[in-house]
Length: 133
Image (tube, rainbow, N blue to C red):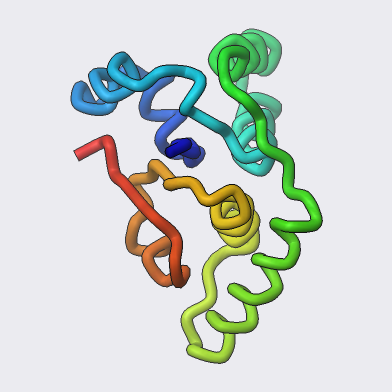
């Protein structure tokens, strides 16, 4: 199974916080770790806002280098539409960026590694793990 990294998981790793997360990264083979393109965008956005934008961007790029970046494609768009309609009908929507991340993971049949389980657990069929606790 492929594991998809959420933005908060990447940030926790880059900051060196959460020792359990660091250990799980060491145990996981990079070939089984993926990054949704929306997570890449969020990390680069954070770098662009940083007081040290260029250095932070380089750090983000170096971190992402070993991982396959998975685009939001037509298959993910189909999942997005179904999940968004379901969540809105239930009155439990999630943020638009998180919805794109969830749809990307669902379309690839993966598991999302996130500390934001409260939001993502609303998405039917989305497999989740929290490596930070």
